[in-house]
Length: 115
Length: 114
Image (tube, helix red, strand yellow):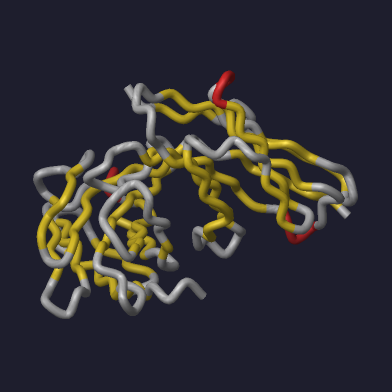
């Protein structure tokens, strides 16, 4: 069965600290896609990144970086030098079926960045 | 702004009632997805339409139905509402219909059933 686990329910850091959000997934498919979305207090879901199962290169976008490791079925997200505006709920998601794009979401990690 | 619009933003109704949630996808997107976000279930996929046809179904109750119209907007109909249907309902859209496509989400409709 397909599953996404975000074991960290809540994380609290002080501004400028680095923080890593963990994501572990389960799927039997060899081709799949992984996503991260951000849900700020305003409630909308904002797309951050998409990664396919054949591309294990790490990706960096400004203060955000992602580490994809197939060997451990993990797709972790690191925020460097966190800011108060990073406070949000972050969701990891999996898309595995060729015929549909339905997403399986993890339970989300609430990140609180204190000034 | 993702380009996906949802109306209404908030909806308060009573048990047993019927409501309709509306979604307009981004320009050029052919797929529309509906998701439900609740405290106990998290974010759950309900249903996907692609170019007017149902493509996939998830944990959608029989009391719920959806459709996608020729202009590609979609409606989610919820009937015989129960207290447990209170949730945030998201619509998302993508260009294609498969796993390779990034979904962009609307702002959501918050449904409160009293």
